[in-house]
Image 1: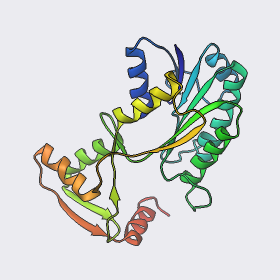
Image 2: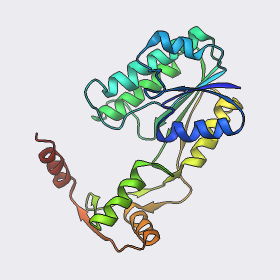
Image 3: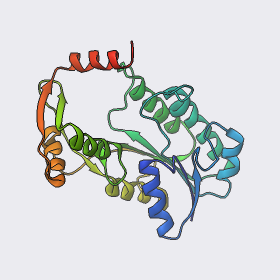
Length: 236
């Protein structure tokens, strides 16, 4: 089966590409590293020719220059959907975020929601996967946390009262993305997926510290203090 993956060099897209390639599927890698950018509508249409499905995993966690949430998540999704339609792709699987929603005051979450709506309104069969906090080999969270525990073993929680989290293993997420793209499962549906175990972020930090053989001090930090710290560090 010929499957295109946007964001193929990213964390989730990379794991999905390796899984599908290992099963013998033909992968069309779409990322700035592969030379096919979702900003180029013509190149996208050419790349998607002959594909039976496209897994749209491209996304950014922060805005840098022209790489804004609107440019990547909204306008990029518009081009992917249009190219898929022109190329005759039968299925689009979109990687969204659990808390994506409209009018919430967060440009990131609002842009992900807008992308979901573009796909839901399209004429294509689709599966929208709204994933929670995802971890695995090569993720940003574990890499940054491991580095922090080796340099300054102090972790500040966000807020004085912790909310529980349900971390999702990337392999479990890839199982769902694969089933949607290859087996055409959960057609025309939006699916929320989280990990099986509920725990607090501080406990997740302590588990990582134990694996690394490090001690860690977890301290509560008011949201206002962290927001002020980010503003100072950004020079605003």
